[in-house]
Amino acid sequence: MDERNLTMLMDFYELTMANGYLLKGLGKQITYFDVFFRSIPDGGGFAITAGLEQVIAYIKGLHFTKEDITYLRGKNLFCEAFLSFLEDFHFIGDIYAIPEGTPVFPGEPILTVRAPAIEAQMLETYILLSLNHQSLIATKANRIVRAAQGRAVLEFGSRRAQGADGAVLGARAAYIGGCAGTACTLTDALYGVPAGGTMAHAWVQMFDSEYEAFRAYCEIYPRNATLLVDTYNTLKSGVPNAIRVFKEVLVPQGITDFGIRLDSGDISYLSKRARAMLDEAGLENCKIVASNALDEHLIQDLLAQGAKIDVFGVGERLITAASTPVFGGVYKLAAVENEQGEIIPKIKVSENTAKITNPHYKKLYRYYDRESGKALADELCIWDETVDGSLPHTIFDPNAVWKTKTLTDFQVRALQVPVFQAGKCVYDPPALEEVRSYCAGQVETLWDEVKRFENPHAYYVDLSQRLWKEKNRLLEQAGT
Image (cartoon, rainbow, N blue to C red; front, side, top):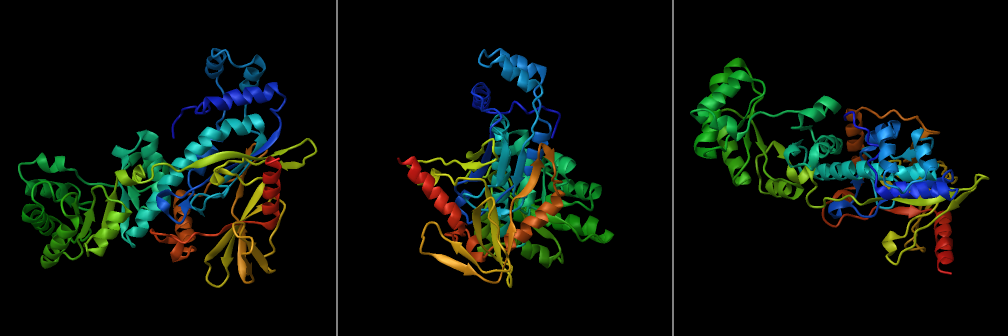
């Protein structure tokens, strides 16, 4: 996004561990780390992964400056061998990731790092920062877009975002999730997310009358006119003045694309009254835009009440994901590789069973019904397991070992793709418009029961029998 060197944007313990790995001869040990999350925001049925493009840019630019090393030396914690190592530091490992815009579920490796321990450890903070933030906003945006039932949703949240990056990259993520555009000009300039907007209440207040304010705007911007009608009295002056100006200035020019915006009051009641007034004036084409602290639940309620709204502008509750403002992605060691190339699985054990990790270097497969195209289940397998789509395949539920399902007419695909190999980027991030379209298509592969807001169906994410046995072996071993 700018010229900052973000290499040092990491938790300090990444550096203390990396220094310790070097001193203990573990610095070159090949490790496997998984990024995954444990629960879906807002109690939803799925999340949307986003932020990979920024991770790629970060890794490409990794380097420690002389100033960075001077700073670290001044902490009096790090050995000179480690500081010398940092002078020529660059990433030489492998990364596999699920493409942006893909629906994902708890426990699934969104991204896997295979790299020497020092490198893998120092990537943790930024990878989590980028994936957690943008996946959170993309997920929230998708919920809001689905609530709008085909009506356009615009992201209006820059002024409420947590900082510049939160505004710019949040708007990018919202576009992936399905928003039609943004109010953030910089996101358009950098990423091509369509930016737009017309006026605030200040414009109306600057003129001697509301009518003059509306007329001036339509004369200056005849093809970009959405008039804010609630500065004074929405139904007594705002809508009537908008109708008058539209008919005096725009209709004679043959312009039919214009609208009004409601930003306060009883939006449902006002929209229905405004729609009736516009239609009576022969302006059936005039769109009604609604804004003001909206989210998916308020939008659902408005539409259930018969509100006449064509476009929703959603700000603070989208850009901050206010109802669940944290996407709990974590970065956990899953395996190490010895000098003979043998992959040795590792597991984290906890009394909180939700925090027990899935060990090993893994592949993630998604199964689709061949006839309907709907996603049936995901399966985590050990890295060298393969699935033959031409043969029946049994899905195994590790939470109920008696419960299996045999698939016979299915398609299967591995969800992760190679991103870096031996330090070289081998993945060309698709254009943002393509990511947005891909996201919409992938969400359509989910059953409606998974997509509902209240008590969604728990999508099946199963372990292969081989991985399940390996996990149980490690759990038994940990208890001895």
